[in-house]
Length: 191
Image 1: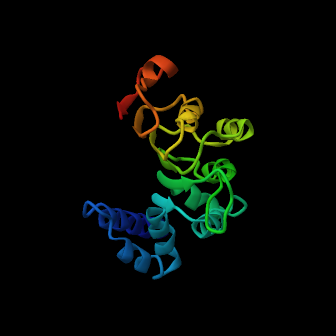
Image 2: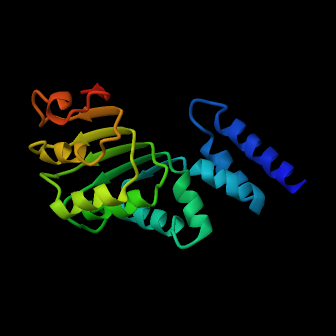
């Protein structure tokens, strides 16, 4: 009987989530406070699409997705779309690029990464290697870089051979054809 109730709650939450083009975030947040059984499902839906654009957001997310707890692993695995802005140098509110591997490792079932590279000329070789080792095999990458030479954007394309959808918005990459440079032949591209 308990399983039937949990299944009914899960289905109800998913109906609410998919009822409109934009999920009703406030309603889901309120439902997550009703009881423990509801919280489990509502929080997973709230974590399906996560935006992290400040150091405070990063700290809160890392705390919520602590891999040493069942709840943390559950919430981390619920993330399907992650939007993040990274910088090459740490600052009071900025997410430094070296934190990206840890962040992606928490999102074991990540499908799409939306990343903005601010002031990034290139990635440190150690960070690229950590991304290869620790990040999940994402399928979609939406990449936007600021005014740089496009090296950082190109480096990321080597990290995920699993890519099937690629969108690049860049003022610094001229005549960029990833299919010839990186053999992403099966990849849908938008530039």
